[in-house]
Amino acid sequence: SGLSVLKFKEKSDACKRVAREIGSLIRHRAAENRNCVLGLATGSTPIRVYRELVRMHREEGLSFHNVVTFNLDEYFPMQPTAPQSYVRFMNEHLFDHIDIVRSNVHIPNGTIELESVPGYCRDYDELIASCGGIDLQLLGIGRTGHIGFNEPGATRDTRTRLVKLDTLTRIDAVSDFGGIEYVPLLAITMGVDTILQAKRIRLLAFGEHKADIVQRAIETRMNATVPATFLQAHRDVQYLLDEDAAECL
Ligand code: GLP
Image (cartoon, rainbow, N blue to C red; front, side):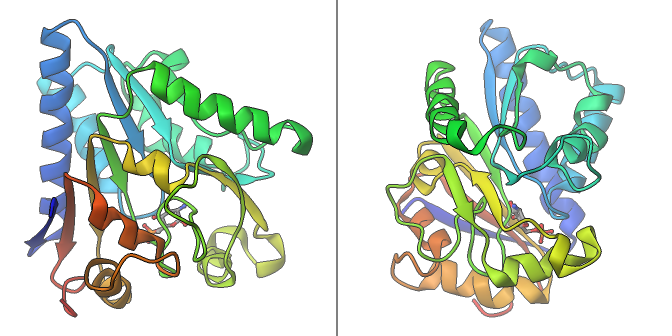
């Protein structure tokens, strides 16, 4: 299978490794006058990857001029200016600190009318395809086994769409929103199939609270109850774990 697991003593080493891989991909593409298409994730896990990319921009002259990005997901509804928005998260942790062309940045829009969501989602998938597909998709994993916001029940063939958030996912977001009643019920997310079309997938997971779901994602047969199991079908997926997250393997 194309799935490999890399264990790190320090999570910062895992993040640096992914950042270096991204940096060299960007440079290779730039040397060929081509774009590099990145699939990006939010959550606490990839923050150090972004910090390292910012450092590489500042200290090593890594340019993001040829980089196109697609974020996995966004809460719905969500104003981009809200503290919990993924637009704000990405600006704060990455985009405000690098030389990316703003029109190359794509994050699902949490402000559109409900009736225009299906068309919007179709366009999002088509835009990814028209850019040549995602070269490298960064992923975290939720305790429900979600990737993006593909919660239990999400099948292998799903595309970008509006989804209901799992109760456990909403509970995990309480600290960001200041109360369960403020956590959105819905989100727009890339689908499982959208994610699987990325050429490389790099999933980061840290901490003992991820150990059980990491074990199930890697070791149970592919099934929609744990959407991350579908990654087993991909030909180039790496799990980058710290020792706590790898404990049950
Ligand atoms: C959110 C995001 C996911 C992320 C998950 C885990 O639900 N939509 O993309 O993987 O949280 O978050 P954390 O990295 O903070 O554990």
